[in-house]
Length: 260
Image (cartoon, rainbow, N blue to C red; front, side, top):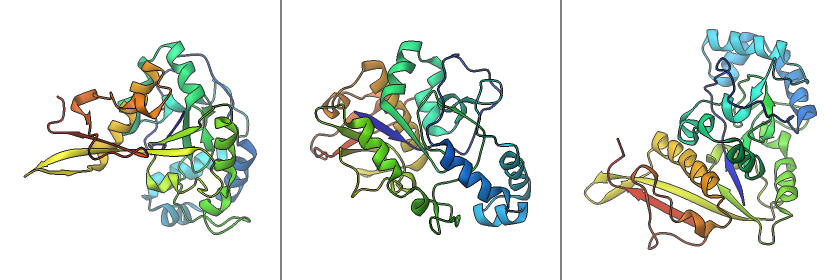
């Protein structure tokens, strides 16, 4: 199985990595093409394009100017240790063993507006470019048109070795939209995480669902999950699989009270 997650806006570029193992990103030429477009945008244009403050726009313009298509541990850091949002707090990759990180490298894909797909141990330079950004390029008016079927083609290649290829979608709608569904060959299974809101009502709460996605990846990594059925036992922080609400292609998990 392949697990898909979104990146995070927050980055941790300062903390030393907990492993020396690293790999090179795969879509460097495409990332360089996007950087070349971004380099010609002013801080004011970046602020307007991405809805950023002047300070954040200035920071990222500096990142675009400094970006180079070469990656070493001296100037870059592994993706799974750099992203620092809710998903990555749930995954808590810095506490995984070398063997567990190795399994994640083989089974986890991080979708990225700039890098297309990052494996956990791929080195990356700091950046800000959400997949939903309407950045015109020679390939179209936004990043979905820029990436086209490239991400789906890569996932097909990765999944080809499996007898029954499956993609576990733990990414946001914004990012999974970058996967061309017509070109994607593996079966897709989605995980849904809901919280009890009183009166018998359950609802997806964004930041809680993001953390749960990371917890699910950690669960799979530590158990070397090989089938969607192996995910049904997921019980981190009070979640439980709901067989009556689930289908073969959608696994629903609920909890009544968040773990403290």
